[in-house]
Length: 407
Image (cartoon, rainbow, N blue to C red; front, side, top):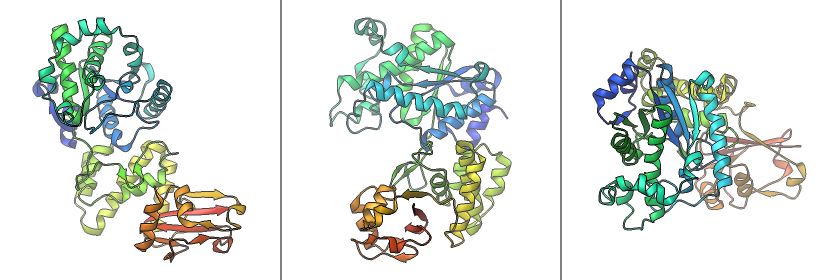
């Protein structure tokens, strides 16, 4: 099956400029295409993973991914979907984040022998002369038209700075630069980027008199309308230091029944015939599909060994036990508990809760257990007497466990 048809069948495609032409372009030839990643954090998330899967499908079909690291555009911050101005980050932080993105993408795409390309728009944006840029690029953008785009229109009441207003011009110039240097014909991105992408598509066509295209993908959302990869604790990160393989596995293992097949199509490289077999499962049998979904993604992000560990730990927990060595754990000094340590403070330290108020609420709702005994006291203190053979187990809700070890 041709790659456009693959993307369509798996449910990726949202909007396309000149769909028939893009279908022919992708199905009949080999082209460079790009996706941009603004370096707003020091790790990619599960939300980015959908776009990475698209790049993998495209690369498998012989196309050349250009992974654009937004070292320059991150200096402004994309106003799309934001209710206020993004916090301005230092260049050092942005450079560090871009380096982290590059390391993660290198594990998921094949960059050998020019099969994929890394670029950082800081290399051309940071050297711009303002007047020259506005004379060459700014003259091609209508303020009236820009204000009709949602990314700007939705911010008019709260306030929109001229600083942010320039984001679309810079992202549009990226497309022009990559067209001129690499012959890039296609920009891909999430559906929230449609306005910005149209700016680049129109700019290249106007200045270069050539056909280029843009295509967006549906944002990764759950059946409940929530962004996929968001939890009470925050995002599901691809960096194992921020989200452990076990935590990622558990998150995916617990997706809504209505989402499991959809996420198999979008987030795994499983063959569609195999996915259709899982689609036949109903009721409790869907747990097999959820385990497969979680295993495939954790395997591709963290390796098969970590996926097997997470699977084994998950099976132990769903069987009603909590004796697996693969459950997330933290080690403390024995001295920390000699005079007692507040449970809520301990849960916060190991990342089980984001705030003390969340901890108090969970205890009041009977949502916390220590060594399988419900905790009812908000001021519960953990002492050495709570440990058996140097460890204790904290349970949050029904399925989240964390082992505390002392040395």
